[in-house]
Length: 414
Length: 156
Image (cartoon, rainbow over all chains, first blue to last red; front, side, top):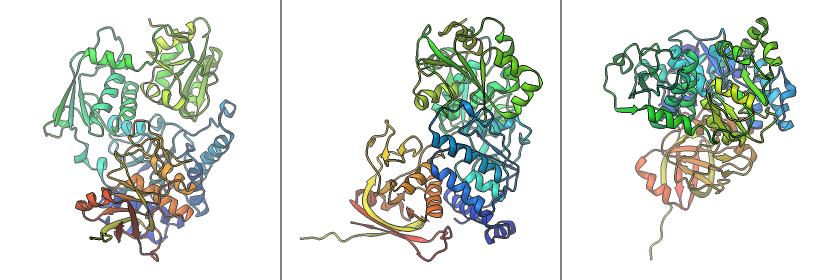
């Protein structure tokens, strides 16, 4: 099962575009064989998840490409790294990870990648157009690109994302092909808890459920709140890609390839139907917390995936009032930070006791100062991973609950 | 008295190399990321039935891969540190495993050959063998350029 090669592919393999591109194309060729791709197509853009330091091999690979004179051939954004290069003093972890992690980030820049350092590249000017063939890594970014934008990517990662960037080629298989983007499972929301006045918790609960129940099959969801925003769909995809291997979902009436149920299923019948009731959704949200209400908190963490400008706009009015009793962290990207500075919001946030974490995220690196106690979040993804990654207990709640709890120093709900 | 002759099975090379060792048959797929400690070669996924076992130097036999693509880095790092498997026999092709072993070979010149069975029917014999040797050559093939070269697995 050897993929067919275009003249450009042959040039790349023959070294006409340099030794690094040749090395990358050969690796890509073996990858394409392993996944059964028949040919390669042009990648319009790439998003790289190789900036997080997972051991010396992470750095050795990028340094090798640099020695070969490597340079990306398409616009390439970078995911979070192990350190906040803008606030390096925040890093409290192992020195080798700090030094190696910072070098790893710089080495990617030397390859020509754009130093976006965000897991939400769709919140930057590099957001792909609908229908674009791209090579994206990072599970939440992949789901967002496919589902909310209608761009086309498979679940790329480790080494292969960078090989696509260095060659501008991507193996044509899976979700690059229109026929593989049809829904397989119909997820119907029978009823929503009437006490939930915003779409956020419902989207997170549904995301958690489809991850567990659909695995890597594409679901079409019917019955999400009509008010669900792009940020709510971001949260849904992020938790679905944590609790399962979801690379794409359709939300009927909300996402671009699901104007109708028939469109989402491309005229075929669902192979399975799943019904979610208000009771199911309440249960899922309740289980995201590992501690009961009233428990003392060490910190609040927001912005996994990275907080958008709209989310900051919702946070700003909640800053009014007494100073919080515990640390509040908000993860976001450089592009959003720039806008916060321009609007004077960054100072206002800092004055209100908020620590802005840029370039990285509180669940993948040692940034949080105090971890003796539970941490509260409004992120389904953070709630899913932090107990394992950081060894902390988690309380999950709405943005307003998180801010009220930060003032009380313990878990309170409105 | 009968003597069991070592059987030879046809396979397909995903990553070239030659390796021999005691077989380690994974009872369930394992995500290397979060499931294998590269420093020790130990299975650390506490939900995995073989948690605590060490794969270093063994011929790892696995039906399929699983989990995050960060598994490629973890496998490559384990191979670099000498705590990884000596070779890998797959029932179905797996990109995460292939990429991890290929990167280790390219960067460090350490071969952890990866092959899939040419005949899925041979799976029962492979999983029953105590020792395996994997011959995924040709030796003189340029790196990364073996395409669909054939390989051989010997059971004993």
